[in-house]
Amino acid sequence: MRGTLTLTWILIICLSQVAVQSQYYSKTRPYHPRPVKVTNLHFFMHETAGITAVQVAQANITSNDNNSSVPFASLVAFTDPLRTGPEPDSKVIGNVQGIALLSRMNASSTQYIDFGFNTGRSNGSSISVFSRGEPGFAVAGGRGEFMMAFKILSLCTYGLKKEVE
Image (cartoon, rainbow, N blue to C red; front, side, top):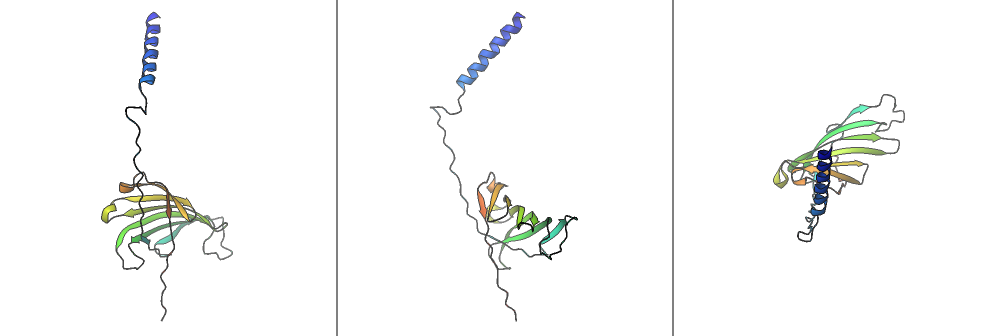
């Protein structure tokens, strides 16, 4: 009994010394946070409905009575090329893969998108975003150069006019 009591007191004294002696921030070594790195990327995602984006599932209890282009509870998967410009023959720098859950009831969608880069400085890196609708997507992280990424990703729609002969 006496040995157990002595051991208990020794442990209490040791633990109290650890709490007193260990400070995360001290006056001898002040905390200096790393500067935040801001990266502005400009690329073009070339999407072709029905080819690069396809409906993979739909709830069987819903109907498409009003001939909407997006039936309620549709799950769409897509994979699109990332290019340096809006032209179809511009240089491919990566690809985009993701899934979207679409709802025509309130015109909302929940999307998970992964922008993967396979050329240039960002070779092997990717940015993962998750959002419920637009205009901004929450950056949920990334790999490689974009590891621990956060903030938002903004998308702008850009369309090429097709000339009809």
